[in-house]
Amino acid sequence: MPYAPDLAGCALDGRYELHAVVGEGAFGRVYRGRDRRLARTVAVKVIKPWWTDDPDWAVSFEREAQLLARVSDPGIVQIFDVGQADEGLYYVAEFVDGESLASRLRRGPLAPLEACEIAEQLCRALGQAHAQRIVHRDVKPANVLISIDGRVKVGDFGVARLAEGSSEGPGATIVGTPKYMAPEQARGWPTTPATDTYSVGVVLYEMLAGHVPFRADSAVELALRHLHDSPAELPAGTPRALAEVVERALAKEPERRYQSGAEMAEALAHARVAGPAAGSPVGSDARPSEDRDFDGRLSAGAGAESSAGEGGRSRADGLDPTRVAPKLTPRRNVNPSARRRSIALIGAVFGLVVAMFVSAKLLAPPPRVRVPDFRGLGRPAITAKARRVHMHPQFTAQFDAVRKGIAIAQTPAAGALVNKGSRVRIVLSAGPPPVKVPDVLGEASGKATSVLDSLGLRVSVASVPAPGVGPGTITAQAPVSGRYVSPGATVALSAAEVPRWRALTSFAGSGHGSSVPFSIRGRQWRVVYRMSYVGTCTLIFICFGPSAQVVDLGGGAHGAVFNLNNGDSELRAFQSGPGVYQIKVTPGSDTAQWSMEVEDYY
Image 1 (cartoon, rainbow, N blue to C red):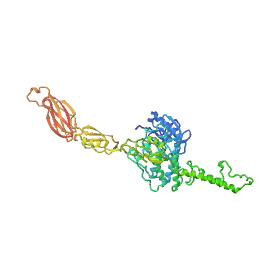
Image 2 (image 1 turned 90 degrees about the vertical axis):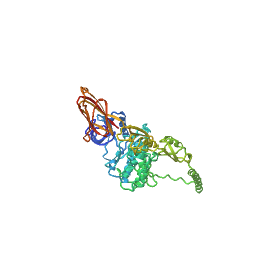
Image 3 (image 1 turned 120 degrees about the vertical axis):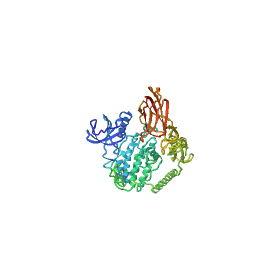
């Protein structure tokens, strides 16, 4: 991993002092700093140096600052400045004096009311971003800051994307944190504000339970649990209204969740009022019993009537609260009772007509549509087809032999008559189920291949030297046993090859000499040597040639002694087995030239 120098003690552009590191991510490092010009504490995020040479990352960094600047809300960390110094790209934001929600959760779960208040403030802030068509995509406790006065602020829009951006789609890069990632985000599908409300649901669950709803050993297993599993029940004592908010936020299908942060904030506000009152909202002095809208102001129904008085009009309408009634006209010479009877009769007839019209509307059966056959279609085609008949698809997934993402079942069935606007449940194929790799170590190559073939896995076998192991025996496999792989994946096997002679070392000399130590791996080994006399030895009747002795360096014992006889080629084999050995050569009565090659058998 490249090393990013600590810039604490520097002053960017001679203006922004960097005092200490307060946070760090893969993209940048955040410092607590001071703006010399305005004499205020700020947070300065500096891009790490190895991203500076990548123009795409530089553009992403500037876009992050622009996204933050687009949203002006007390619940979102505000951007003050952006620039580029010798130390790298940077932006300057407000400094939140407090702690992150991640730090707070390390001390244990929160009380239901406190958790509800934090989540409500978080949703209101995200709602402002959603109104600008910005999806955060990385909502997690580390990005939720709580000031010392209890106000919640959302930071790090570094992986945010405009909801209508062209970068969204099946091929888009999957970004976010797996523990808080919505199902569609894990699939690499387009994200929407409902993606953020899912992440808020995970954060709210963690605040109430003290842990996230899904845990696993790998990112892939965690994504599968988000896609298919249901979370465990929340702790006893969690208000039902708050539990229902969590349940809806964690719906697998985006259309079943809250469609924006503002909508979820409204649900949390109702849950907070419905639950047991145990204090004021975080960062607010409002009472739960007051009727308030989303920005905390009193709504029109809360105080208008009391200020206007009974039967009066509010001055906010531009009229005086009381007015003088007009004088009565002179009494006419008419038949008042007959006039009243006529008016009553006309009113009765009109009321009867209105009642008949309303009854016809209420009692008439709703429009009916015939359910199309969605099987065999992909998700985009299903959504378009359902929209044409005014139906709302709900998607689930299960493993099947059909290609991943294709509909394999539906409820109601194709051809059924249902009310317009009804929901249709679509089961999409998640592809064939993963296969657990068996343990084939120690098995014969043919048997191991047969076992893996029966599971639908491909096999590649490589022969490898394996001293002391029977030929064809499996000595290694990858992936190892117990791992889950996709159907049709290849398992690489190593099989012991048939033993053969392998050249290990060679040496030569004239007269006296000795070899360097050598290691034997097989059960047997041999020495192939050549020797020829030099001088007058061939002219005398008796000539003593050089001899060789095997020394076991491991045990220190001297082994067999053999002569290097005259001739073109000689061979001497040993059954000593594995070990470290050396051959010492003793000269004979005349000078001789000799050479040796040691061969191991495995």
